[in-house]
Image: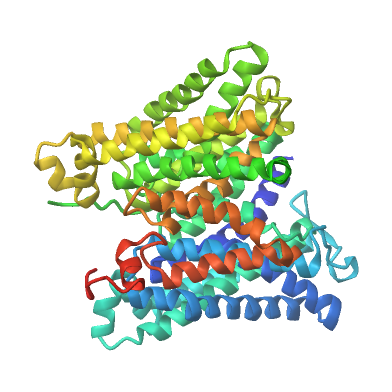
Length: 293
Length: 289
């Protein structure tokens, strides 16, 4: 039974990690807490649903479509809203408020278009098989979720660590001004980051939509709250930390449901977060910086 | 005329009075912001105040003034207790820790069914809030905050907001003042919660969650924190906007959200910005920033 729970926790944790990655990437590179990330997550799920029901796309194509669609939404948000604020050097609260407005608008736009009720993916496109691995029954769907998440995370990690692009991104995270002086195309990489981060958010929306098979316009809000908890647990802007903390939250939630009770499930993320912040103010994996006089 | 007013009041009294309670909430977060802290637990403090006072008037038959006092004292005490460890965090971390605390409060309310009614909320709270209670509360809080701004404590808040380290070196008790701002803000939020609970007949845990906390912050930032009028105006806008946009039906929140974005994009210092207004009526000196 424990193995079964651990497996469920792994697939849930992967999706949390994926969502938090996009979130923390935007914070790390652009320095913005993008509170519309939850809405982008939801937009991704609905984009995949539309691709499947209207265009009769296969599942993999729908996931790709969701990535591109939500990525484009993220790109537009950066160009139309965040860039002017950046130009003006607005304090970090201001872009946050703007993204709250955007999230609100997207949530209700989708509610207006699709209705407030739950939508489902047609059951025939979902892989129904399950495998027996070491006595644990594993659905192909869950296995696919884990696989997709791991592939995406690995690609992102390698890009950031090993490539010229990743080095440029890390330089921007340190200081956009210095990066610009070094001849890095800062605006271009801001666009790329916005696209990729929103795309990752959209894919995690599809995966959660497949996992729970319930899509509704406000599905992004609980995810957003958990995402916030995860990126703080992991240390703001820390990619590796966000991944570990996402997995950690998945395990903590599933195990607390199994051993404490389901009504405490939502308390876990924030209880943990509150405790961690008290003990380690920069997150579990973040590096501590203190202001020197 | 009187008929017309009665008619208007019976439809819109709740809206008009929530202008007042939202103004109180906006002022409560203004207080912590004016001390340089981005604390976002005000929705939770509002909830603590609302539940404390509602339970006291419903189950124990306390008179309303005593319930108001308790509704302000309870969140202030809680603020004091959680303030000790949390206020040493700064910036975004403080915001997130206080948001997390807010979620913990919401979940606590959700899971203590026999006291708080859990997810069903508390029903049948006596409607004790009169219109003049709200008006009086807003006026008193505004007066109090205006006095505070001009006092030694208010100056200390400002010094801490500008530069915490420098303020400490000048002999200002940084932690003490932060705690004071945090607890006072909690008490004001509790007052708003108490008045609101005894107005709307019903309270539920969802009213005091994450979205509420973000909404309170939005009101204040939108209005601007350079003056006490900013938060009040921000509260009015955020409260009235959904009503004014009724004709958009299903899409009114779309318009509502986009208006927020537009305001943020084009009015950098919030709506209440004396310099901008002076320029608008053609009296201002250019270049003052």
